[in-house]
Length: 428
Image (cartoon, rainbow, N blue to C red; front, side, top):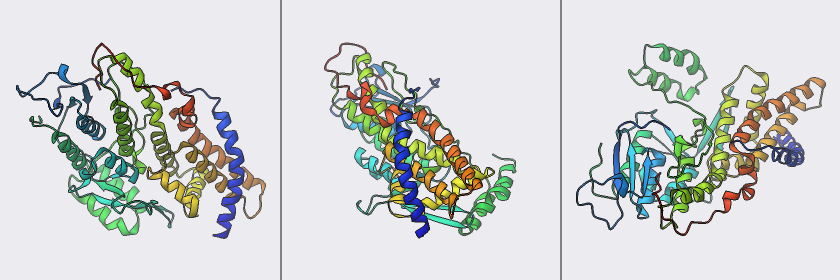
C-alpha cells in the first residue's frame, strides 16, 4: 500500500505539470462540434386555471410541444406543466418500455429528481438502493463507494426496471390534469452467454446468471449507442434526452444527464413570459448547450472511456490500463473519493475529470517503472500513455474543449431572457 501511495504522489507531481500543458494545447483546438414522426399518442397538460370544455385541444393552444415521453420528455413535461405552462407531449407508444430488467440511476440523478419534485417516482416500482460499485478483474476486487456521508439518509442511487420508472413518470405527468391519456431467439445468444460471458461472472452471481439465461424468453437486448451532442439551432424546436446525446450505459449515468438537462431547461424557460417569438427564444436557449456541459461531458466521457478500457483485453497496453484503474481506485483517499464523486454525478467538473485521468495515467506509468526503470519498462509506460491519450482525447474533443474547460468564453453563456416577442409559438 505504501508503494502504491508513493506511485500516486510521484504521478501526481508529474501530472500537475503536464496538466497545464494538456489544457493549454487542447485549448488551441477548434470545437466542432429528424426523426420521422409516426402516428402518435399525445398527452395534454393545460395551465392550472384553464378549463377544457371540449375534452380535446389543438396543437396551437399548447405553449410547448415535447416529442417523446421517455425519461427526459416526461420529466420535462411535468416540471414545465407544474410551472403553469400548457404542454403537449407526443409519444408513439404509451405502453411500458420493455427493456432490460435492471437500469441504474446514480445519486446525482436522484438529486435531480428531488429538484424536479419527482423523487416519489422511484417508490413502489421495486427500486433497490445503489451505494457504489465493485470492480472485478482477474480475481482482484476494488470497492467504489459513493461519497454520501454528508447527504441525507434517503440520498443514494437506485436500480429498477426502466419500464416501471417511465410509467411512474408518465403517471406523475398525468396527475397534473383530468383528460384521458391515450394510450430473440434461436438459442445462439444463450449459448454465447453460457460459454463466453458466464466464466467471467463473479462466483457469487454465477448460479443466478445461469438460471436467468435458462428461463424461456428472459434474454433481452438493450442497444448501447454513443452520440455526442451536436446542436443545430432550429427556431421552434430543441432536442433533449437520447435524441440529443447518448453515452455507453456502463456507469448508469444516462438518466442523470437527462434529468440534469431538464433542470437547466426548466430554469431557463421559467422567466420567459412570452414564447411567441421562436427565433428570439431559440437564440436565448442556445446557452443550454454550454450550461449542460459540466454534468453531461463528465458523465459522457467517464462512461465512454471506461467502456473502451474494460471491453478490450487482447492488447497488453489495455490490460495495463485496466489494472491501473483498479489499482488507482484501491488507493482510497482523494484518489478513489474524487473519481467516485464524478462517477455518481455528485461532482460534475470537467477539470477534475481531466486531472484524475492524468493522475491515473501517471500512476500507471509509475507502476510499470518500479522498482527501477529499464528500456522495456520505459517503452511499456510510453505505450500506456499513448493508448490512454488515444482513448480520452477524442471524447474530450467531441464534447467541445471550449465549452468544457472555458465556458465563460462562449458568448451564448451570457444570454439574458428576451423581454417581448410578437411571433410564432415556441415548440419543444
